[in-house]
Length: 115
Image (cartoon, rainbow, N blue to C red; front, side):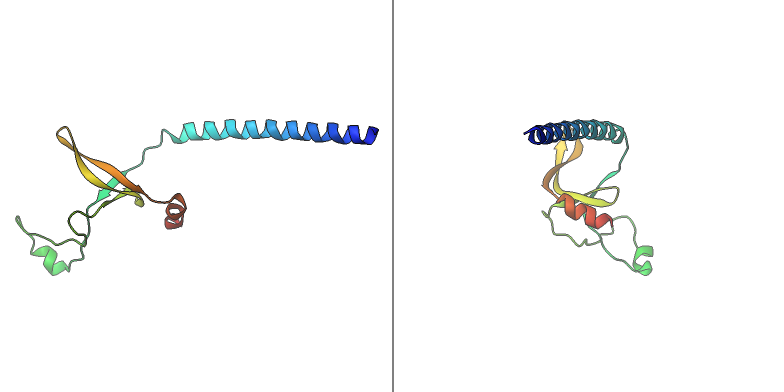
């Protein structure tokens, strides 16, 4: 009987220690996130792209048109520091352009694209 009480007490102590460690980890994670919140990142909206020969590039002048690889109306790529995080569409915000997120890239796929 005494052994059972000791085992129960040990289990309870271990459980409390684990709970305390989890709280410490959560607190540390929150502190780490606060540090990350102040890091600047570059958001880019990519309309499309095209490949040109140097000859074609040298012949460009005002009024030249280059056909892009994207259809009109297709969602645009939204990149953070060169990594695609979402797709979206252009909107007007007052007299400025904005971007409305329409589809967020799965975080697992984002991580794979960074590797």
